[in-house]
Image 1 (tube, rainbow, N blue to C red):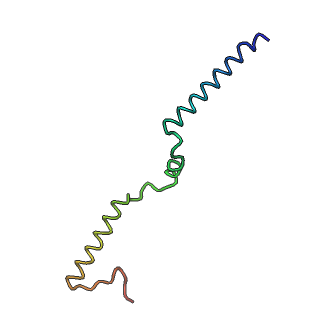
Image 2 (cartoon, rainbow, N blue to C red; image 1 turned 30 degrees about the horizontal axis):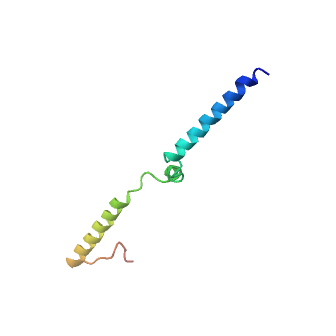
Length: 81
């Protein structure tokens, strides 16, 4: 019976600590984005960022435009059979 005088305040103290930790985590934004970190494992790391990919597409288009202005035939990467 005397052990209950120790265990009940200890349990209440631990519960209070857990509630404080939960409230701190919510207020500091720990639960704002639950999806992106999980998807970062699945996605490829060797994919180019969108800005670099867009720049590469623009460079390809400008080189095709220059080749069509030079009078050279452009087959857009297709081979004729």
